[in-house]
Structure formats: structure tokens, C-alpha cells
Length: 297
Image (tube, rainbow, N blue to C red; front, side, top):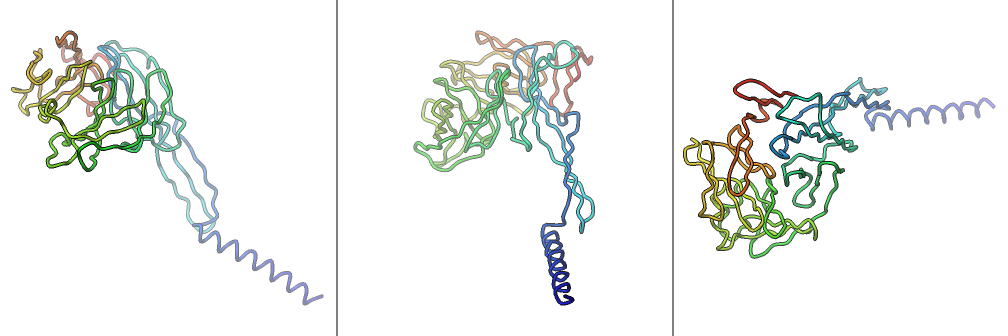
């Protein structure tokens, strides 16, 4: 009887030691807790809908608390639950006109750029793209990569409207790539294809563009000069669109064009700028009129 009791106790001891060994290998038997912050962080402007509405992206922080038997208590702070909102930037209002928050636990890189007047693009280009349209939920399109007469890929930093109802995807310096390197790509969201190409003779002129997009069958280009004296907006290589002010920074935001701090519209090849100024995300969600702060979120 004594021998059997000792054997039973030994088996229990071995079970406890086995559990302890497993806990040590797994960094301690722990109780994990996740707490999401009530508010949202990192708010920045990601697009302009028109001359009065702006899109703002943000995210929620979470704290994952771990407490183990053989390890001290520790926290891991990460982010997720990305949120897209629409605000009025000409008149101060109580809050956003519309918001939608993703249920994704981790970040999806949702706010990589503005694609149209109402769509923000993000995700893991060039293998897939996530589209987030105002009034709708974000969805993902898996992409098939093709090449036509060129080789190599590039990091995609811009996706904007292009000819034939498609989109032009390019990198910061890809349009200037030499040799047989691919210079841009055409995104077809219907077929789910991303086709890498070199510029043909009709499009070679856009190599000098700092930003480029199409309206219908017309190609528009922004060329920047560091001093702002020679910056200009071109249409189809030769036609210059008169700008109402000098600008050293700028580019297309959906159907709007930013010329330094001014948000402007283009109608019938005429650029009209609002009297509201936005200095960029470095200044936060602040808009000025006659040097006075008029809107802040």
C-alpha cells in the first residue's frame, strides 16, 4: 500500500513538473487581457471630397496585458480598428457627417492615398488593394500581376484615375525609370489585374510630372518647382492650365487639386481656389481663413 501511494504521488509530481515546463516554454502560464482605448488616435486628412468636405482617417489603440506565473506583468500597445470619417472643413460643426470603423483587430494600412473623390485605397499593393468608399464598408480585391514590354516591379505610392475608366499606379520615381524597367501600372478593378508597362510615345511626356491623372480622355499633370516660380499644371503635354496662385507643393486629391495651402477645383480647365487654407497634416485638422483659425477637429 505504501509503495502504491508513493507511486501515485510521484505521478502527480511529474504532472506538475510537466505543466511547469510547458509554461516556461510558452513564456509562462498567463492570463491575457485586451483593453481598447475609448477614443481614436493619429487623425490625419486622407482625402478631399469637394470644396467643403474632407476625409479623415484614424485608428484605435489597444493594450494587451500579460501576467504569467514565471514572468513579470507586461503590456503590449498596438493599434487597429481603423476609422474613416467625413467632416465639413469650411464651417465648424459638432462632429463628423459620417464615420465607419473597421472591425479588424490589426491595422490594414487603409489610408495609403485618395483614389477618387469618394474612395480611399490601401492594403498590400501590388498583391491586393483595399478600397474604402464613403457610405460603404471597406473591401479587398486580390490582384493578378501582368507585365507588358518591361521588367521589374516598384513600390506603389499613388493610385489615381486614368484613361478608359482604369487607374494609374506609380511609385515616387517610377516614371523616370530607365532601360527596360517598368514605369507605371494600369489597375483594372473590374478584372482584378495590375499591368506593369513602360510609357509609349504618346505618354513619354508625363515623365516630368510630380503628379498625374486623367479626366475622361484628357491627361493632367502637376509639375513642381522648389521655389514655386515655375510650378505649373499641364493638360495633354502642351496646354497650360492657369493657376490662380504660385505653389511649390501640390497635387491631385480626388477631383480637387491642392496648390500649397489652397484646396482648389478644376472645372472646364479653370482652377478655382477656396479662401480656406490647410497647411498639411503636420498642423493637424486645422483650417484657416484670413489667417484666423475657423475650423478645428
